[in-house]
Image (tube, rainbow, N blue to C red; front, side, top):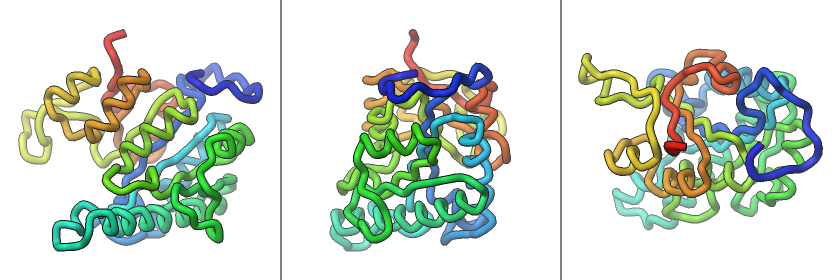
Length: 252
């Protein structure tokens, strides 16, 4: 296990990763066609998969985006102050986190929402040791409000939290089954890339995660797996080590 060594954990020989951070886009909780709003069926589908993984004993944290409600960077382009717009986006992630937490509980899991913004009436503050304690107790930790700072994406928040919490891997859930040589919707000859290095992602300008997030993962040798989570069961398949999507790591 990377980084953190807390209470003794149950051995999971069938699992490649025993401590994970799952990065969800806000759109994964939205309407299947538009990605907008919060769709109960979409939220339940995500919750089922997350609970299934957590019930195997894998310590699970989730960072959720807010693009289904509002993207701060886009909102600022129409005249809003960027810092204010990003704060609105962070509040959008909190709404998503609360929705996912409720669905997780309905599926028989136990969850806690921790927020980087101070909203103590609806969520606990993000405190690293508190988050670690929840994870070691088998609770699914849902992390809201990004880093709590404007100008930083939820991808960067995911890389930061995964590092802080000693996760073995950052799972980047998307609508496609990995990184391609070109946009497969436009170019029928595009092929999936099975493995990439951090430097290849940065040098080729691949739109996997923003540069800050990839650089942070590279610095801490945190592998990233980009995969399609819209195929139910894929989260558990990735955690078990099945070859899905695209894996990003160093040459080592």
